[in-house]
Image 1 (cartoon, rainbow, N blue to C red):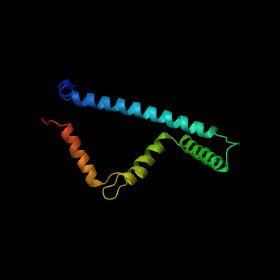
Image 2: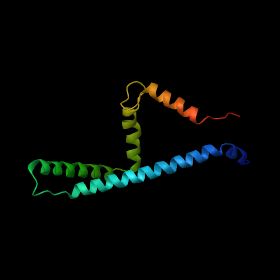
Image 3: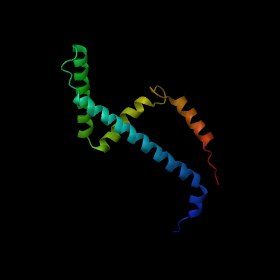
Image 4: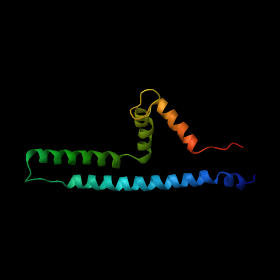
Length: 123
């Protein structure tokens, strides 16, 4: 069995685009996770003894939401989180007929426009 470098060379721009997309998503996810982690850590430290009742209530709610978030995500394995996102939340937001973020017609248009941006040359 012979490895065909000519195929890789022919589609080098796809590999390059995929690598850049992966790096971009990694940077965005790392920055977003850092900001979310900082905000949740600060929310767990909020104690407003001298503030008014509405601010104390808001601080209590933020502490409890932060505690719930950290407990849920630290208590479940990554694979379980991936399964929950892919089979529970993703169909809820992206559905062929009545998705909250995108429906079937919009998905077709996005795919069609993506194909126009990145034409695939068939041999």
